[in-house]
Length: 143
Image (tube, rainbow, N blue to C red; front, top):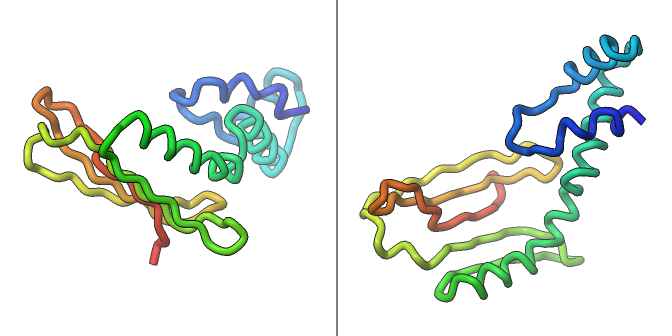
């Protein structure tokens, strides 16, 4: 029920995240209901899952997403490696239209700390309009 009260806070993914502490503070202020941080956290997770789907649902969409990317961007390279029982292991994608970019490569990595751990690696370049163009993405083990 709490998740339904706060679900509207998660409709716009570009907004600053609505934290469990804010959920507790707002429920106390608006309804006079004190709730624990644990309940606020569970409400946040439930509201976000309803709005954006679960992590496992997103990983199940990777195959079709990669197929659509490959069809829409001829010359791109896409690779999805699954292990036993069709479990996701690695993902790589490199978009083709980057030959007109300046020859400076920007490489970055970010640890994924959600339920599914790993590292997101990115490679980008700057085009003639000074816009950042993503060249490649990879999701791999953190090791």
